Image (cartoon, rainbow, N blue to C red; front, side):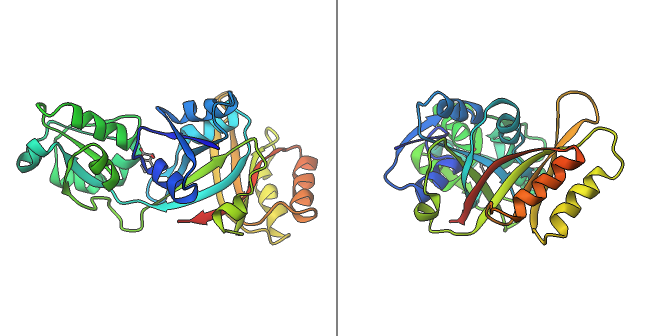
Length: 281
Ligand SMILES: O=C(O)C(=O)Cc1ccccc1
């Protein structure tokens, strides 16, 4: 069984994959869309992609690619604690305050805003495809004083020295990842979790006063708990949005189909993106 993930080696995504799928064959891809394309092209059986960070919010490219471009079911979710460290080439260890650029993934940069603002004020910060890609770049250019924000495994993998540990702004820093697959994967047995979520994509009828209120009521009176509601652009014009809604329950035969039928009767479009166990590792 082959798992595609946002690489290179030692990204947070790989950490999440290794925790839940030990011993599986791993295939790194340079971007999130490439990992999903690999699944569509059947080069891998599963793809694991970051979807939400507790400090920075949704990973928009994941949600947008999943809703606008590919049609692959979500079969699981993994939530991983995130610790960010500042690392440099060992040759520049004593001089780390004089780095000329800090590289990382945009979400990691946002998670360390306070540290960058106070400790490395004025140093340019550039985002690259992943935290591990940043670490790899720093390793490859010892003569330029560069720094990366990445995890401990990336420091080991790319031979970098951690010069500041735990630089994320808030200690409670977690990221969730979606497990995507066309296969009928028994993620409940693999993850040991029976905590299910169901993710829906909902479009509203145009120009209907109180439409969102009515959508929420369909869940509220059935006592279906929502854990997330996110609006994303339809990409058809300013002000046109759809909603991604997470329900805190497994797709059943009564409550969720009833709510969906009610939304459809209102003129909403509803698509189930997945009903899947969610695990904290
Ligand atoms: O860049 C990585 O290591 C990723 O896996 C994406 C990401 C970035 C920041 C926090 C969590 C995941």
